[in-house]
Image (cartoon, rainbow, N blue to C red; front, side, top):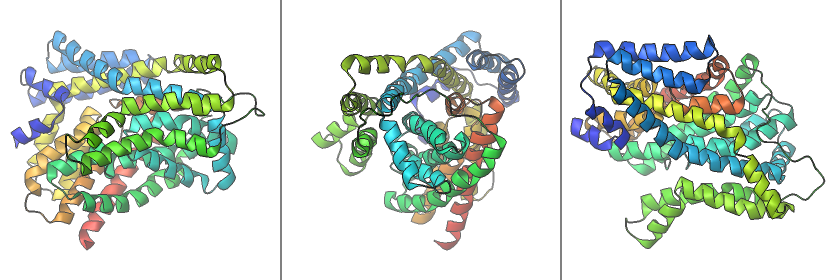
Length: 464
């Protein structure tokens, strides 16, 4: 089982093998103290999250007894890989979002959504948009694409930012954990040898009510706990009389990266490796390339389509990067903190403990993913590690139960996002929330989504 697990882990997670074995008696206190230092520095001393995450990482390594040189290596590696991956996508997404706002395209989408949705149905519409955008994409990419729309819908409709934002986040997160062809579920499907079609069908059955509970329904309660105005990160242009790109053109532009990434996912499923079609679609559907194409396309369909000159388009792109500098540093530092926890072996320790228990297979799958998620902050690492641990248990199980195990792992992988998750800081900074407000809205929403998903998986197990 160890060999299977290591073969599934990403390269960065294997770095823990380079460190000496650390006793469990030091790993658990190290993780708890590191997270405690991080929370206290931010909440009590109001230290910037970038510095707090850095000091929290050093605390984890020091308490665990890891040489400081190795701790710094883990932190900088996680920082760099997050900045190179998510950071570039955030920058491209900010450019796209700024063009969407400055051209009036976001206004067009907002006006159309509000015009066709009442105050009661608007959160449901936002949940649907989040689910569609999130189907083929990682959470961070979908979030940066949706932020201009979320902000403008909140301002124009008069509803709370939490009231319209939480449903969209629920749609994004549910797709991230439950429905192929999202990369997370596909990893679990491959590891457990599950049937893709059965998992897709059951995943949709679980995702729809899960989004409803964690999205529009919970948003009504969360909006009472957290009341914040929509940040001015994406400003729509002052002139409301100038030309706008049409709704159809705007929607086509927004969905371009979605379609490209979906094409890649379908090609990976349906096409043989090495064929010309798969090679082309794999390249075009890479998130970096898909978003780059979307930005270039938006320069013409949105910018030029709204009558903006080349200089005005260039100024819009340039102005998009300043406001996200802090977000980039915080998200990258969150990646460094997560990598420190992974490389010290905390995630693997949790997995080993749970693997020896005698719980039911589906509940065990959920718990393994939950504890690794809590320890590392990564839904992807939780999915990959839990799938590797449970793969031997899936052998010989009925097809439907194997698919339900995939969904149980996916539900567990999104449980209670907190301070060691880059997504936590991304939501906090974009929404302009305090740490406590982020926990009461985003973290609780993730927990509801995870628990609701598990309950539905267990109910399906009784009838299929």
